[in-house]
Image (tube, rainbow over all chains, first blue to last red; front, side):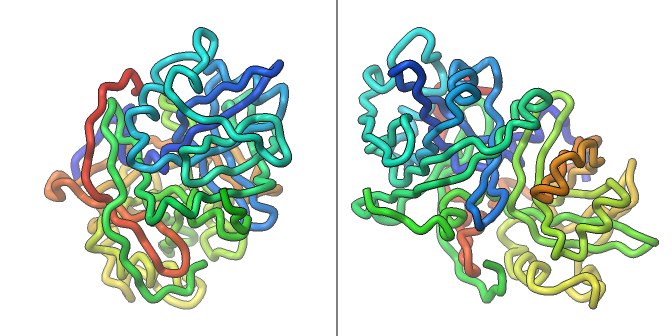
Length: 176
Length: 176
């Protein structure tokens, strides 16, 4: 084994799929690119994510306690990167990048029509926000686009490199 | 958009790469399969993970506050599933599945020689363990195996299905 710099570990461990996170504040929707998230529980469906306070979305997420997590497939890779390279404090990213907002059922932030999956989420725990910008969200409604067959997700590897889903393998498993 | 069951959302969002987590307690090493983890910070290198208290590893992780996160490539998929389908309370998984423990530098749990990446971790925050089984770990040392070129990682999709890394794409990005 060879020693590896800690500052580059995220390139190996960073989870994916890369997702888009939408928020809405004072009638203005915004969207950011995110890949630091994980499942926390099945029932209720909980997830954790880290949203840096340097992101314009941070304040909306913390104050409105609502967000949509939308999962883009391979075809949206260019837009995913562009969304991540600018700030909602300066532009309307939905208009700029041709993303179509759809009304969510339970919350104010919009779904993204182009994404194959949209998850309506409510922030349920902010106890680790101050220390780590870590939010716990409950998924209250999930949507998929049945027209997108076998979507390939993106996994960030740092500096503009993404691995795209490859082959699916099936193994005998007792794991859920 | 079509409604999607919340109980299956993890199949879309579950991050990957699937990793192995080693612990050591009273001189006995153990290993489990895990895919609920995410990066939390670059510097210091922090990550979060969820280890169910139903797992034999839970007690060792909580009491010793040390673990290795080892990342297996495609060739280990069978072993990864088998490790996840049995309990260290009953068998020595290293022996049973032919995984080779290597001494870590800073902590007691072993590295796994067959994995292309090994991360020595110390638990630094247990404030969300009681509520969510969520641990915050600091990575104190990272190792890679330079002999494994372009390793393909595994992403769990539920019920024994895994997506293997496919093509790498490069896009112009300001993202780290």
